[in-house]
Length: 222
Image 1 (cartoon, helix red, strand yellow):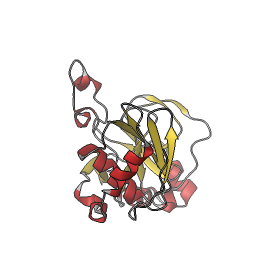
Image 2 (cartoon, rainbow, N blue to C red):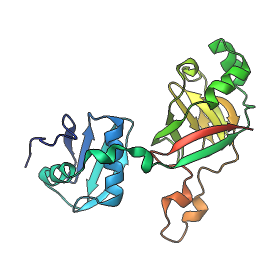
Image 3 (cartoon, rainbow, N blue to C red):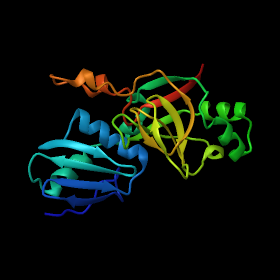
Image 4 (cartoon, rainbow, N blue to C red):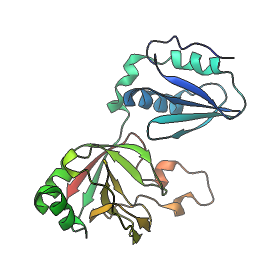
């Protein structure tokens, strides 16, 4: 039972069925996606089960088959005042030792000094766009254009947890030991993933993962 999108706040957004109990949303600005995420956490639509965040889309899953008009009606109740995402976002400071094995090569590749790389990397206010390929790994928006580099041609077999890195247009922090092709600028002692806190009981994800989508991250030079 399809219904034409007729609400002003999310006009132009695209909603597509996803399996028997889900809808995939895209074609909307980042601020509006954040509104939807917050609303799903606070006042979700009837029958809501969970949501999954992508780089530029959002998957909403229901516990059962739900007509698209239910989702449209819920979206129509979201208002423009909710676009102030700053009142919902947490601000997280991440202390970093800038002694990574790729700091010197990044400096050469960008035509900067090592000190300039550190200053440029630690200056922005980053936002967690999505959680990526390993549990607790954040993809951070806000990396200065001067530090945009293609990922390494030959990935490392093992990167230690806490490694602070850049790859493409994103900054990130390795949350577990894994292979990886990002450029390593430094390291942090902040634990990003603590699975032992999730064993045996129902646990708030905030206790297991240091960061979540929408969080603001500032790197502190130590």
